[in-house]
Image (cartoon, rainbow, N blue to C red; front, side, top):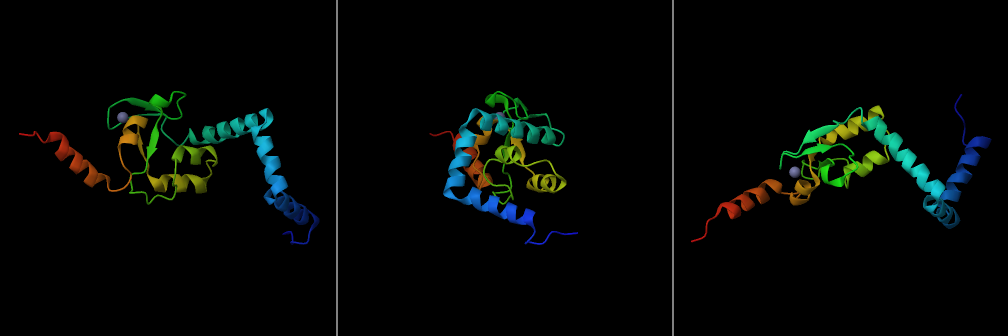
Length: 151
Ligand SMILES: [Zn+2]
């Protein structure tokens, strides 16, 4: 049987929701997240999320830009896979894809969202060099620029 909104547990849930949205609740949450206990809980949550994604995402790849071997969630930023928006920023997941993975479980729905984005995998250095929007035009201009022997 489905709970109606007037059931005691729904009321408790609503009270909790209101509390977390209040200034007092927000302050309390902020204090918790900055505490050792809160930080450990966040680390644990990220680890759990990533463990699920490790079954979906390639463990290692080769950067198509520079040929470097890169790893999923490597401890060293220099050889960690940077997920690249290669559909001109039209992907459902905006911002930093890795951060999205940290706070989303690998559920069938989320896997579908992730796969629909079809992110490329680059090293951080190549990813930084490549603009998200109008990249083909930018690359053509840069190629022209780089191969133009003046004089
Ligand atoms: Zn690279």
